[in-house]
Length: 113
Length: 111
Image 1: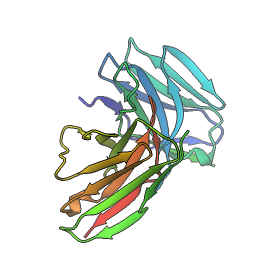
Image 2: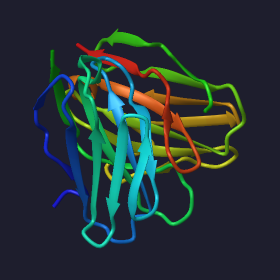
Image 3: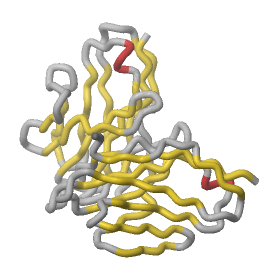
Image 4: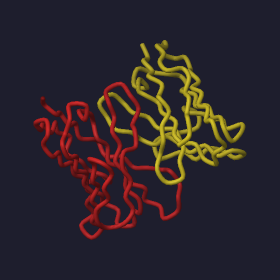
C-alpha cells in the first residue's frame, strides 16, 4: 500500500463545474496535508494546506480533511480551463515542522471549455 | 515564501558523467530538501541538506550517487554522479518549515 494514494485520472469536468480530487493516506500520525498544482513542465505550486479536521476555503478552492478516515480532498468550484493540471496531494508525517513531504502520484484534471 | 533559484534549468549529459545542480534561496533557511521526479511520476525525497552537517538520505538514495553540499544557509548543491539513462528526471530543491516551496527544477536527460 502506498503511503499517499490518489486516482491518477484523468478527471474531466466541463468549465464551470466543481472538480473533486481525493487523496487517502496510510499513516495515522500524519499531521499536515497539502495540495499542489503542477502544470506540465513546471514545478509544483502550493495551493492549499490543511492541518485540522474540517473544511478550509481559499477562493475557489476548498480543502477537506477527515483524519478518522485518513482522507483529504480538494474541491475546485467554477472550474476553468486554466485549472487543467496535475494535482498532487502531499503529507507531512512528522509532528514537528520538517518540510519532508510524501507525495501521491497526482491526479490529472482536464477542464473542457 | 522564499524565492528559490536552480541552475541549470535543463541539461543533456552523457552517461558516466556527473552533473552538479545549484540551489540558491533569497533568505536563510535551516533545511533544504532535494526531490526527484521521474518521467510521469510523482516527487520522491532524495535527502535533507543541513548546514554544517552531513545530508540525511532517504531509503534508496546514497551519498556516493547523490553527494550534497550545504556550505551556508542560502545555498546547496546536489551532484548526480556516474549518470545512467535511469537518472533522467527532474530534480527539485525545496525549502519550508512545514509545507514545501520549490525551485523551478532541473530537467536532466542522460543519453
